[in-house]
Amino acid sequence: MKKLTSTLALVALATSLVACSKPEEKKPEVKAEAPKVVEETKTTSPSTAAAPAETAASASTAAPAAAPATAAAPATKSVAAPLELENAPARRGVSLFWAGTGWQVPCDDRLRRVVMTKRLGTPLALLALLAAASAPAAEPTSSDSRTAPLAPRTFVSIAPRGDTGRTALDSIVTTDAFLPAVHINGASGVYRTDVWIFNPDRDFKAVVDLYYTEADRDGSALPGIRITPDLDPRESVTLSDIVKDYFGKNSSYGLLEVRGSLPLIVTSNTFNVAGAVAGTYGQFSPGQAYRNALGFDNSIFGDLYVTGLVNDPNHRTNAVVMNPSGATLEAGVQLVDSVGNVYKTVVKVVPPYSMHQLNDIFYQDFASSNPPQGGPWRLNVYVDLSNGAKVLCYATVTDLRTGDPYLIPGQAARP
Image (spheres, rainbow, N blue to C red):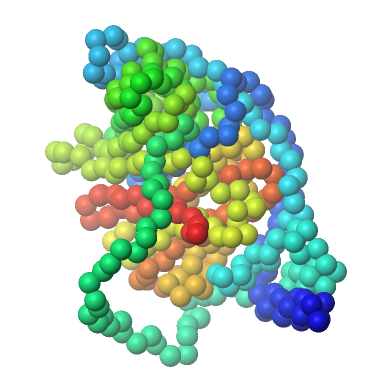
C-alpha cells in the first residue's frame, strides 16, 4: 500500500509540474576559482544595503579595482586615541563546486522550482521533471487578468490581542555585514554614504576590517583596510563619506563588507548634499548579515522577497542583487503581482563580493511584460545555479516629486 501511495503522489506531482511554465533557459555553469588570500574564512554572515535610487541609475562603474590606500580622514571616536586605518588582508576566495543536479521547473508562486536531488531520485519523478521542463512557457502580460474583479477589502472588529508566544529575537548584530556605499553625482546633488560601527561587547575589543568592491567587479583579490586602534568595549565609530575619504573613490558605488572579530552593529545613511534645495534626502541602510543570505539549496523552501513595490509615474524603483560569497552568483529575479502571477523572470550574473543594480525596473528590466500600474508588486530573488554562491538583495523606491528614497530589504520566509 505504501508503494502505491508513493506512486500516486508522484503521479500527482508530475501532473502539477506539467502545468507549469518553463523558466528562461539555463546558462551553463562557469567554474572559476577566485584567488585565495586572506586570514579568515567566509563562514559568518553578510548583509546588504542599497545604493541610492538616482545614483546607480546612471552608474556604469568604470573605476579601477585598485587596492585602497590608507584612509585620508579620521573617524569620529569617543576615545582620545586617534583612529587610523591600515591594510587588511585580502578576502579568501571560495572555489566553485557542484552541489546538486539542479533541474529547475518554474511554476506558480508556491511551486516555482523543483530541484532534482536524491529526495526526488525515482525514475517517475525524473520523468515528471523532464515533462514539465519541455512544456511551453506562457509569460503573463498586462492583458492577463482574472475572470472577475476582486471584491473590495473589508475590516471587522476583533478581540483584544493576547500573548502569541513570539519567536526568538533576531537582529542585525553580526561578525560579517554587507551594505551599499556610494560617492557619486546624481540628479539631486552629490550622493555619499556615512557608516557607523558599534562594538556592543562589554569586555573585549573588536578588530574591524573593511572591504569595498565596485558594482559588477570581482572583489575576490581586493585588499581591505583595518581600523586602528581596535574598537573598545561599547565603543562606536563614524566613517563619514566612506567611499571617497577611506577608499579614495570620487565617483563610485558598490558593496561594502564590514568584518569583525566580535559581533558588531553596522548602520549607514546614504544621502545627497549640495542639491538645488538646502538640506538632504537620505535613506537608512542596515548592514545585512551573511547568515541571512540564501544559497541554491535554500531556494527549495523559499526565496528572498522584496514586497510593497508600487508602479506609478511618481515613483522609481531600483533593485540590487548582492553577492556576499566568493563564487560567481547567477541570480533569478521575478516580478510578481499581488495575487502571485509571475510577469517576467530575468537572470543576472554578479561577480564575487559585488553587486548588480537593476535600474527603474518597471520601465527597463521588466517593461516588456507590460506590468499594469498600481500594486503592490513584489520581487522574488533566488540563486539560479548550484555553485556555492549566495544572495542578498534590496530595493530602493524614490518619490520623483521630492527625491525622497526609502529602502526595502529582501526577506526570507523562514519558519
